[in-house]
Amino acid sequence: MVNWAENPQALTALFLIALVESSVFPIPPDALLIAIVASKPINWLRAAVSCSAGSLVGAAVGYAIGSALMETVGQPIISFYGAEHHWDRFLGLTDDWGTWLLAAAAFTPIPFKVATIASGSIEMPFAPFLLVSLIGRSARFFLVATVLRVFGDRVRHFLEKHLEAVSLLFFALLVAGFVVLRYI
Image (tube, rainbow, N blue to C red):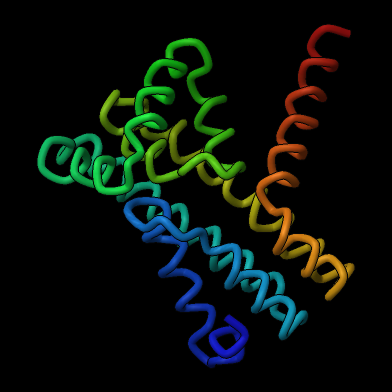
């Protein structure tokens, strides 16, 4: 990843990895994002924007797969990754949580490609889908890039080992904050 991060095409590669991760690819772009910001901290903002933009385009592709190509493309993708469990859970929880579930998938390690394809297959309204995807993915990638920019190598090593737990904790705190604001 460090070699990729120092390549002149690193931001393009980050955009493309984020795009395919949101629709069909199993590896999150966080590792390259971390490597880019760690190797060239001055690029933190450009890296976060590139990653967010690629992820948003990929989310739209995933939505289109679920909406128009579920039988021929979407189901084989879900099956290939053995993500039927995530698929069933997402569909089951969507009735209760709607776009909040999409936000959780956008920000946490829940496979985002499953959420994008499922959102298209259940015909979630496209504008709210894009808005929630943009906010959730951008929050995740900007958080990672900002923390690395501010705290550097110490945080990079910690995040590389504990990114999923940190993401889940942050999301739980975010939801708790909304609950407190709503009921107090």
